Image 1 (cartoon, rainbow, N blue to C red):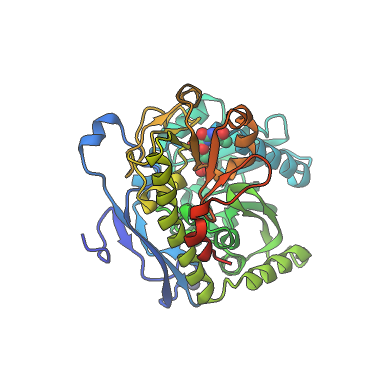
Image 2: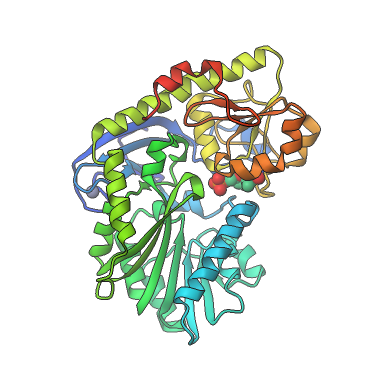
Amino acid sequence: MAASRSTSACKVRRTCRVCGSLRREPVVNLGRSPPANAFLKPADLARPEPRYPLEVVRCLECGLVQLRHVVDRSLLFRHYVYFSSASGPMADHFAQLARSAADEYGGSRPGLAVEIGSNDGTLLRALRGSNLDVLGIEPARNIARYANDQGIRTWNTFFGREVARRIRSRMGPARIVFSNNVLAHIDDLHEAAGAVADLLEPEGVWIIEVPHLAQMIERVEFDTIYHEHLSYFSLPPIERLLKAHGMSVEQVEEIPVHGGSLRIFVRSAALSSRQAPNVAKVRSEERRIGLHRASTFRRFRVAMEGVRSSLPRLLDRLRSKGKKIVGYGAPAKGNTLLNYCGIDRRRLDFLLDTTPAKQGLFAPGSRLEVRPPAAFRSARPDYALLLAWNFETEILERERDYVAQGGRFIRPIPFPEVIEPGPAARFEVVEASSRGRAR
Ligand code: TMP
Ligand code: ZN
């Protein structure tokens, strides 16, 4: 299959999904890669894996950074191994968001909260006992079933206008719509935004959480690039999308989730003449970083190439000294990192992850086995590559004994370094990558 040709599993998108422009320029090309959540069963190991192009482009008209190819959403999302509840800090984060949103926007009358991409119901569960009835929309069959079994009403479908109509007619309009880490997954953003506009009460609020392009660029978080993440958002393309559907940004907060995200509060444009000052602040921060300039993205590419050359060298040096190295966490982004850097079973022993649905499976591409966290204690590795770097604080806290006994974590980005107890010390082989730092 030529990279530029569409197939039923993978289509080339020629226009920007926000503004429709054809004027887009290449940012980076990560080559043909297996989907990042396509963990393999032992029986799959004998077969070659499907791989699809992973190329990032930037729209010169509206600034949206996006993938050039769209893998069929049924292939990516009908069966899913990511459970929100498996990461303790994320579960706490969503529960807090749900409760504060209910306090702020829940009102006193009974109402409805809908979550798009509700996963296992971790967020909606926290609304129990509030005046809000809840409904989750979740395309993954296995996860929707799990949520329903837990008593969180969940419809197993992709969200769109037809679903919004059905919700309205059966349950009424929504006072709050949540979409956390899902906007980037949606190819037809206008269908989704239009559907939310149709679904909301006139004074309702749409709360979006989405990884922020600014942080991805600043911290060289290139591993968050994978087929599920079709868009890498900054504020202007989001504002443009909302405007087309009679909505606007009322408030935005920068939050540390997933390496730096935006939490955006959206209302009907008719209501929000009052835009919080923080919106202008985030916009000017994005300009300061240079998200409107091609040179910013060239630096980003050089920085990620730096990681690709220095991380394998670091691992090889440690391996040549007989060190045992594992991957800590098996997040989707870990698979981008491993595959882009050419790290497989020769360079790591195995991965460990708290998600039961991933344990016993093998990571796509690298084919590293995923083991439960207990394997960390029994294997006593010398080094642990921190693939779930977004949870560094929590993980280092939990693994204090490991570090006290001489175990070390390796932080892969923005440049590979061994995390020493106390102030972090840079590893010697970082010259190549530090030269390539984005800033
Ligand atoms: P995420 O970064 O995409 O949220 O995925 C994080 C993955 O890391 C998820 O599979 C759960 C796993 N994990 C661990 O293995 N140990 C941990 O301490 C935490 C917080 C997450
Ligand atoms: Zn555009």
